[in-house]
Length: 378
Image 1 (cartoon, one colour):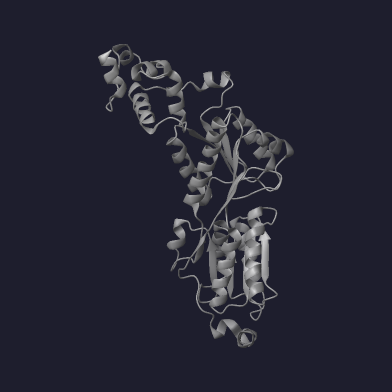
Image 2 (cartoon, rainbow, N blue to C red):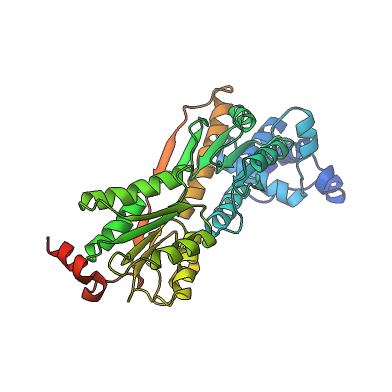
């Protein structure tokens, strides 16, 4: 009995029975771990799942034993018993987009810390593909899903989400009543336009995403609100798919305008649109900020390296990813603790910040022209 008691309370590595030293990995069961640690198999199972009612010391001991014994959870058996797996789905529109790629890495790391795995799905903003990806994901019986919804999700997709723990990320859709972790996009473009107004610019153009998406609506609204507060009633606005080629075309059309009405400043609604706008300006031999000031959106690493740097609305990408993961895990734990009853849905908005670099400058008299100088004097 003394040896058993010592093993139970030891803070060091659990002693491995000789039988377990000979068979490791998939053959080792939760019962083996429980026997080694002299605790119940239920406690081991809950510790592996990160249950909030299990002490941190017990979780540490179980985690250490799992690593030493090479225990591998049997996902297939768990699914056959009708239990949820340790998989969490992340459904995003574009894996090549720097923002979403960074989100995926952070979410995966956060889940790994809770002994859970990420299953990534990409929709390309196609509702049909979104539906297919969710159906495929459900075959793994995920514990939950973090999703960036398309503009027009299929009714079947919305119905499937109702019975699934999920969090909307960055975007929301009116028919999806779930937790949401968002960015205050309205505040972001408002700050961008206000900065250009403070630099003396009055002819400010905006190139943004479609208003079919909640992000597109919010970013446009922030830009328009800033101009309205400055008593500016007209502006050059181009809305379309958030892809570089759309921004290049929009820049070409904008720069074809008469010099007296051509914008002296530009706000972009995404990093992809910023890239296309820079390509369009270069093709038209237009320098920034000498000929035009511009403010980008998001802050991928290359923004700091182009020219004297891109002034931009920096998004709290790390906070967004970590918060979305925390909200989902909290809901899963709450459901277990409350006998299957989930908490009320919550919406969290995180604030972006304006990063000032060399792509914006004070309006010059040459840029303003006669009409611009008149507007500045009133």
